[in-house]
Structures are given as structure tokens and as C-alpha cells.
Length: 489
Image (tube, rainbow, N blue to C red):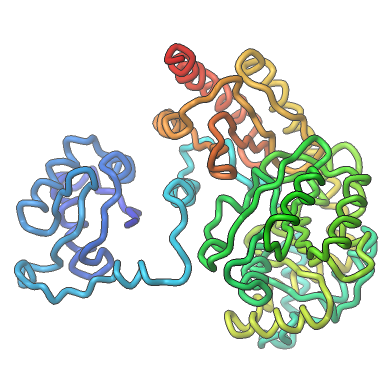
């Protein structure tokens, strides 16, 4: 869908609707909004332009009359021509047909809308999965950048697996959490998401069945589905994946890999117990089922350190291990790593060189400096203190406003609380009315398409004041919809 990132000048002598007309005509004429593109909804455009609907409708009516736009019943507004000389031409390039033929599918509409709206400072973001900018270690970063400015001899490409110095630091860091691996078995990636992409392209066949927890963060992505792979959800309890579900599915499906987030699972916040981890490793060894362990939340424990990683228990090279600095230090660094058997890492490194020729050299230098001098562990200690305060505050707020309409877990770490309403609720309607009231939420059906009762609440991003105010507003809106739902029964 097209994006609006401009607002009319309310002090201009030109009327607001005329400014909007000129803006849209320019977008169409320059090809930024090509023929056969669908415009955002009127509500979304009015909000982006910061004008009332009547002003917007006046502008759109003029563009329709001039032959630039066409309204299709039940489908919204579409660009049909890009200049006066093309009003009757049938030779326009249809970029949408090319988009439809691409390998990677477009994101789900709600995910696209969340991604666009997260830059809006007026919204309270109740589900955002990243640390607040308040956590950014500005002083330490300035010291590191100052030190590096006089010590970096070159900013050229790194070797395929990434900076050797950084991989050495990661190898040392991983030993502190029980994972003994050499730099040769580590590859630097631009975040754990790229590690998943490379694994998908390089190791999995089309038609493969991927086992994963249900709900799961991966259900909100279309990466695996774009590669013609299938998801098979595994039931969860308070200790993690239920092993009976794994056994049953292994008997009936052509499984290739199990993807899991055992530490402070996204979105439920569940921490897999040590016994369950041991049992899962034993079962996967028996079934010869490889594991992708996504451990990006490990260091965000709040009450006590988590059990050893599955990779630390792995004696047969069964586990590909993903780590990252995006959740703990800075998503903007785009630095993560994947650990696995050397031949697998060599294959993935070759694919990475074909896609982006390596992660940012500067980011790799910065990451290595954080890991080499003890700053990272000191920083994490402060992050845990602040996240613990936020978690406790949110749980107290939930108890005040939601105790009679929902239940929730108290996570031992990570970012997320999995809120479960006592009755089904229209999540689509809740998302819409929350947005109208200045709230951006992550509904449970993003992570389990059959969910009708859940929200992913994050205590990591919004301030404590905004979290309290936002959850109060959310409770009022949810009660309204729940009353309608219960009455309909």
C-alpha cells in the first residue's frame, strides 16, 4: 500500500484541499504512486494529512474528476492514470503485476500498518518489541565511537563469516552461558531475522514442515510461507513446548526443523524449564529433528538467570543457535550471530555474501568493543533493573483495570505479557478503536491466526506513565467490545 509522509501547510494561502491535490498529482506524475496502486483508506489519509474527512474528500473528488483516481466498490481508491496524456492509454507499466510475481510475499496488512504507525510519536505503543530510547547508553556509545575513530584502520568488507575479532568476542561471551564454540562456527548476521532468512534459503527445502510454538512470532511473518514452507503449531504449557505434541507430529508429518524461543518466548513470555529442555533435546535427537534456537531474550532475565541454552546441552550438532544485540543493546546496530556446525556456517556465509556482502563493518567494530571490555555486562545489569520496575508497574496496572475481564502471566524476563480476555473479542475492531484513541496494540491473531482473546503487551517501550494511561484506556475500550460480545451470545 502507498505511504503518506507529508502534511499540508496550514499557514499557506493555498487551501488545504488544493495542497493535497497537488501532492497526490505529483506523487502520481513522478511515478512514486504508479498506475494500478491502491491508496490508503480515507481514515488513514486524513490522519496522515492531519485534516478532517470533508477536506480530504473534496481533494479526492477533484482527482477522480480529473481522471487520476477511480473508486472501486468495496475496494477503495486506485490510481488509474499518471498524466493527462495517458488518460486513454493502455500502455502503462503495471508495477503491481511485477509485485504480485515476486518471491517474497507482502506482509500482512495489520503488520504493515503497525510498521508505518510506530514512527508516530503521538501514539502510545503498548505492544512494541524493543527497548525504549530511554535505555540507550548514550555516554558509553560516545566513548566507544571516540575510541574507535582513532583505531579503525579500514572500513572495507569483512570476511564472509564476519569480523574475526568480533567472532572471538562472541565465542568468549557464549562460554559464559555454557556454549563452547569456536569463532569458525560463528557467523555474524544483520540481526536474528536475517539468520532465519539465510537458514530458510540455504538449508530448507520447499514444502518443508517447520514445527514451532503456537502462538509464535513467526506466524506474524510471511518469509517461510513465501518459500512454500508449512507451519505446524505445537501446544505450550507453563514449562514450554509440550513434548507429546512434538512426538505426534513427527509421526504424521515430513518435518525438517523445529523453531523455538525457549527463553521468555515471544509473544507469551514463557520460560522453558531445564527439565523440559533436556527432554526436548533427547526427543529431537531420537527423531533426528534439527532445532533452530532463537535466544535473543536470554540476557533479559528479571528474577533469576534462565536454564542453560539448548545449544549448551547439544552434543551432536543438532542445534543452530541465534543470538543478537537488537533486543538488549540497540536494534539499529543490526548485529546478531548464528552458531552451528562449521559446514553449515560455511554454506550460510556463502549465501550471505551473495545477498549483502556482510554486515556493517562499523557496527561490527562497535559490537566487538562492547563485548571486549566488560561494558556489556554492566549495561545489562542496569537494563534488568529498569525492566523489572516496568514489569512490576504493568502487572500492578493490569490488576487494577483488568482483573475481572482477563488473565495474564507474570513473565520472569523478556518484554511481553500475554493478556487473555475471559471471552472472545473482535480483535480487528479493538485494533481500530484503539488507534482512534491514540493506542497502538499488537493483537494475538498476529501470532496465532485463530486467536480471538489475546493481546501481546510489552512493558519495554512506552514510559511507565504512558503504559498506565494506555492500559487504562484499553480497559475501557475492551469492556465496551466484550459487553457486545457477551450480549450477542
